[in-house]
Amino acid sequence: MHHHQHQQTNGTKIGIKSEDDVIISCAVRTPITRGFKGGFKDTVPEDLLAQVLIAVKERTKIDPALVEDICVGNVLQPSGGATTSRMAALYAGYPIGTTVYTVNRQCASGLQAVINIVDAIQTGRIEIGIGAGVESMTMGYGSSAMAAKSSEKIPKASQEAADCQLSMGITSENVAHDFGISRKAQDEYAALSFQRASLAQKEDRFKDEIVPVQTFIKENTTATTSGTAGKDNAGDNDGQMKAVVISQDDGIREGVTFDLLSKIRPAFSQEGTTTAGNASQISDGAAAVLLMKRKTAQRLGLPILGKFITSAVKGVPPRIMGIGPVAAIPAVCQHAGISVQDVDVIELNEAFASQTLYTIEKCGLDVHRVNPNGGAIALGHPLGCTGARQIATLLNELKRRKARLGMITMCMATGMGAAALFENES
Image (cartoon, rainbow, N blue to C red; front, side, top):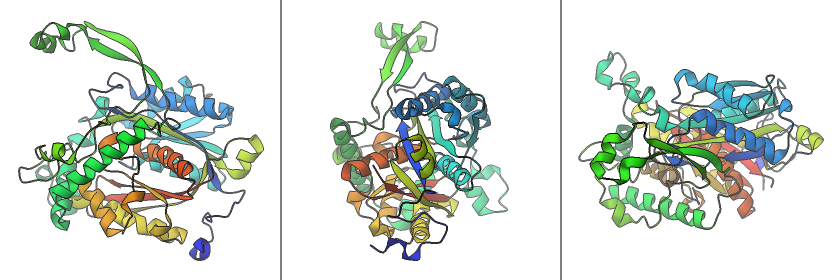
C-alpha cells in the first residue's frame, strides 16, 4: 500500500513506526446514560471525569506525577468547567503539579482536547498528557449556548452570524431539505443504529472501553403511592440516595424498528423530518485518552494501543452545520495521503440521521464501516465527551477486527466539521 506517498513531511506516516509518533496508551469512557432520567442524572460532571482519570491510572499503572497536563473538552458547564476539572484531577489522585485546562470546540471538544495534548507532545513542551471530555447534559442543558435566543433578537448585519444561533434541530431540517433526505431514509438509518448498538451491547463489545462508575441515584420514595402525589413531591427532600454501579450505556433500546420510529412526530416543525427517534440523544458521560511519544511508552513499559496520525477542522455554513464532516473528511485524508476507502472503521457522530446520511452519500462511505456498533442516535451524545469517547470505541473496534486505520468525525454547532485518523497497534 502506498499510503505515505503524498504524506507531508512532518506528519505521522501510516505503517511506519517512529520513536516520535504520538501514541495512545489508554482510552476509556464511562457508560453513556440518558439525560434527566438515566444512571448519571444525579452525578455531577466532576465525578464522571474523576472516574475516567482514575481508570487511566489503574489500567496502565502509570505514576500520575508523570502526567504533565490534562485538557478537558466541555461545552455546557459554567466557566467551561475549569474549576471542576481541576478538582476532578486532584480528587483522582493526580498531584498538584499536574496542570489542567478545558477547551470548548462544541461537539468536537473531546477530540480537540486530545489534539491539544498531541500538539504539546509533538512540540516537546510536555512528554505525557491526557485528553479528556465530559458532559452532564442533565446539569448543563438549557443553561448556556443552548439557551441562545432566536436569531431575530440580534442585528441582521450578517445572516451567517445570525444562523449561528439557530436551534440544532432546524439546522438538521435545513440539511434534509437542501439535500433531499427523506424521513423514511432517516428513520431507516436510526433503526440501524439502534439495532447495531443493541447487538454490540448484547455481545459485550463495549466492555473493554467502559469504566463502571459507582454513584448515587435519588429515588423518589412517594412516587409509588400515586401518580400525581409522586409528581407533586418530586424534587422534595424525601428522595433517598441509593448507591448504584452504572456499567452499561442506558440509551440503547432493544427492538427499535423502522415502524416504531416512523410513528414519532417531528420535533422542530410540523412538516419536518427530524424527530426524537432519528436525532442524537441528550446524554451524560466522560472519557479520557492517555498520550505520549512511542519512545516514552517504551521507556516506561506502558501499553501502546495505537497512534495518532493527523486531524483537520473545516468550516461550513452555520445553517447547515451538520455537513461539517463532508468538509473535514477529505481534508484529513489529504493530510495523511490516503483515500477514504483506505479507512477500515469510521466513527461518525450521529448528531442527526439527516447529516449522517448526507455525509455517507457525499463522501462515498461504506455504510458497513460507519458506526458498526451504533452511534449517537442509539448511544447518546454527551457534547464535550463525544470526541474522546469515539476514540475509545474506535480503537476497541479496530482491535476486534484486527484492522489498521480508523477515523472519528463530527459536525459542530456554528458550522464546522472535525476529523482525525488513528492507526491501530493493539
